[in-house]
Image (cartoon, rainbow, N blue to C red; front, side, top):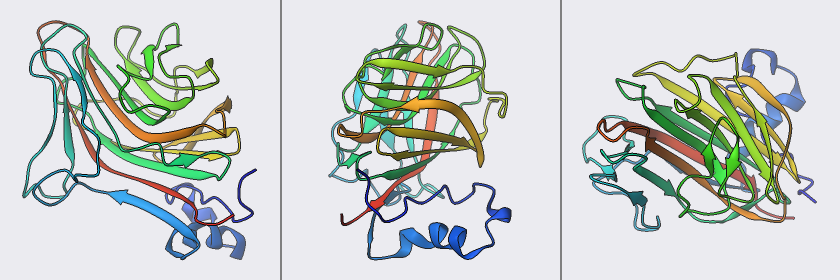
Length: 246
């Protein structure tokens, strides 16, 4: 069971409505000693050594960090191989049974044709994508919750999760249109086995589950959907917040 401490809501989720004491407490929770907060905007001169090696495959595929970049960020470079990819995790340090909130900001490339990306949480940091394809919503990971954009299917954003390999997909999210060179804010709140998802502060998706006893990592992934055009997705920032004590 998740801790009796409240799991925070995304900081941008209908914040104008959160004016009573209870909602304010949830928003302020991450500043308390009672919460663990991992947060990275990828500043400095290199990606932190605590990160595992990036998961890449294909010609010129890479996860790169450029020092002195204003506002930081890392680049997920797909390379020019057909279905070449670049993915980055951190470590399986969070469980739904404790409860956690994932938040991430991602910027799309200047061209979004022939592209797949994922952002969310997964039970591995070395999969060739948590989701094989958006259309059939088939998965590599067993327990995960990610937003997916995949032009092998269409140009709509989806939210896909799985509990013990059983996949649930909310296809064609109408609350957001994915455009080139645009930054989006994603959030996923997990309490026990229950998953809720948010894009740019709007609640999306329903009836999603994950195995609360399975450890997960924050996860971002980009994949080329042709053999000629490399795409670069920028992971600007992400964080995980969980109750520190049970």
